[in-house]
Amino acid sequence: MKHSTTQPPNHRTTEPPNQSWPLLVFLFSLANFLEIAIMAHYVLFTPAFLSTIGFGEQDINAWTGPLASVAFLVGIWFVPLWGVFADRYGRKPLILRSYYVEVAAMVIAALSQNVWLYLVGRALTGLALGNTGLMYASVTETAPRHRLALSLGLINGSAPLGGLVGGVVGGYVVSQFGVHTLFWMDAAVAAVIALLLTLFYRETFVPKPTPPIPVMLSNALGAVAHSQVALTIFVVSFAYSAAFFFSFAYLPVRIGEMVGLQAAPAAIGITQGVAGATTLVGSAIWGALADRLGHRRLLVVLMATAMVLWVPIYTAQDVLYLTVLWALFNVVSPSVSSLMITIISLNVPADKRGAVLSMIYMPLNVAFVVAPFTASLVARNLEVRDVFLVSAALSLLALIIFVTNIQRTREHARAEG
Image 1 (tube, one colour):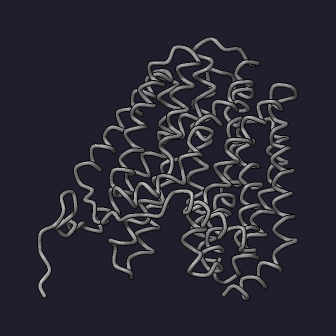
Image 2: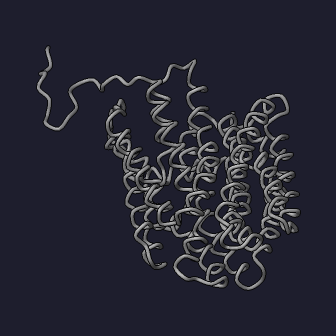
Image 3: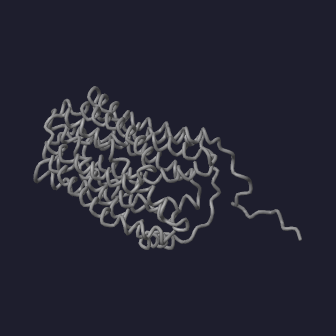
């Protein structure tokens, strides 16, 4: 018996359009590069903005942390939803969503002449979270299997390069033309990204019905809670990320204390630019050595090295010395997160892997809410540089948690596999 070829309205009846995978990788790499470059400006040059609108040292110390936290405080609740919406409505609309939100956020920042409007712009960027995973999923479906590692590596590698260029260019622009000019430039760059993706990114994913959102969240949380490997990595990731974010928002403030407000933007840009370059070097080195040395063993070494480096960063009194130390820190620290994701990918059973990886950035997002806000209390009531000591303590906590559970994660990985 023949089935009717008539389709109900609003159902897709044609095959999705073909997408050139090299073009897609280029678009996503460019988008990621430019996004990191402009979004870094929000963190690096918030002290410069606060100074421009008339804030003194105490007010800058008090506001820098909360302003860094607000985007994640707003956006963290929506992160699990973006993947669900992408399954229902397609990935392209959800990816474009983040870049158009960033255009609006940067325009608001450029217009801001008081901290409250700037706070709105910072908060709005929380609604731009959650696009990277969707990009990875789109490339995974489009690129040939033997080119997948290269494709994902190019997209992932564009991030530290964006941090390098964004820091250097941002520092120059703020020094020469002011922070508001930088935000207008960032808005224009975000608009270019959004336009390029709108015109040249072709949706190849066919949306499908999904279970109710509470069911999907329950499944993901259950997958994490019942995997010793995933649970350990999530706890360690939170502690380690909290250590980083406790200090990252206040690094520009500390540089400003060393060189003065006038010279701070250029010094901040150079410091972050050098760190971006060393991140690329470190990622290449540790990526090549990980399989040889063992992922868990290398993770312990990198976490211990990062913990030790927080101490001389705390004692640094010269911006050149601080720049060198921050560059060394970025040789090791960014690879810690990559190793954690690798350990989960290799040791969590395939039937649970997708649910666990969908939640992989949740500890980092929570840390970005809690740590900068708490750091503001330290910076306001003690000294700005004391945040680096707290980061050292949190790094030690993360290391202890991982080392004391490392054997148990091996045993559970064998049992789960």
